[in-house]
Image (cartoon, rainbow, N blue to C red; front, side, top):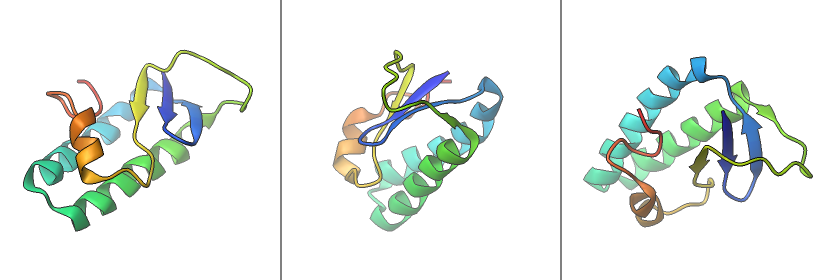
Length: 92
């Protein structure tokens, strides 16, 4: 799966990593719903760090269709709230 982190670029991520990402996504969803800014910042950072660590960066000149788009590190709680679906940022 191709994942885009807004403002950074794209990474190719194996589907086998989505269990770990969904756990962080569930935490992020709860923190956004609670308006817990401090926990939100920590969990968003952990989610993005995990994607970067587990994913293989695509070259800057590659333009693949992204199957998943994640907010950048500097996204606000309200911006992420507007991006959330029923399942959070990551479907499933």
